[in-house]
Length: 134
Image: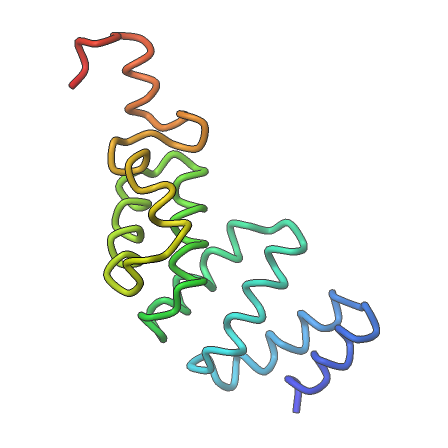
């Protein structure tokens, strides 16, 4: 029932109430992949990327073949400089969808430890120590 109220409030453009309704539905059924994805996307649209990533992680556990969740987790881990986490989710994404445009576009940079715009820890060390880092 709360899931329907969540949809209704999205249509009314009342995202806070919608999120509250979706969270109520989630408490009753946290194995619903569609609901989990909706909550994650709503949180992301509201600017709470950290909380959204928690729901994307749960979504990736519920549905390991969900490419959206894996892409968002690669993106989030990469944005916070967690190259190991980004690499792990990138490998899972490529295993699920070897033709994934996002994964193929960013694979080399992430595999080499560079973050978004080269902000990863390895990129920082390379900028400090130059070519001596390999």
